[in-house]
Image (cartoon, rainbow, N blue to C red; front, side):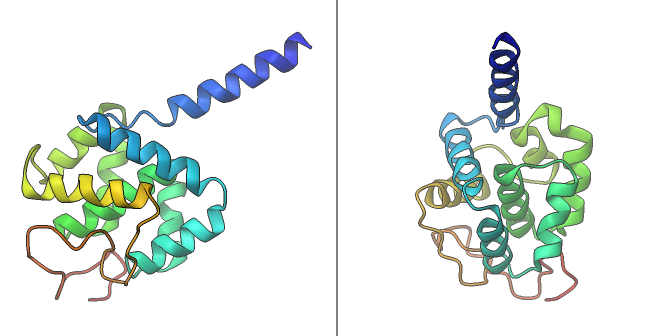
Length: 161
């Protein structure tokens, strides 16, 4: 019995530790935790939805998970890739080297400044996603609000424009 309780506490602690996003914004962190919790209810659906939203293949989405990301991390990685117009592989590289610093630092390393239009777009899209309002239309999802730079001519990390 004690062993079971100990294992349960370790599992809960591991889940909580895996959801420490450190974006620098409490509301964004809370949204990412909701995204992660909801995704864990049906990971296959989440991966397919993420692939559709960001116009990438499911294997491309799975590269995030293979790099040690949870669902909230993967969502954040694709949003940052989309906003910065950097390939997802670049975001994964930064994640691998800087994940202990949190998404706030990683976003900054990738060119998104705290308080910038891109940061507010990222925050708004994560909030929409956590409420189940993902507007997945193959163009990056989210609320459609942002810095007005569109995504024409940009690679979404899958080698396609």
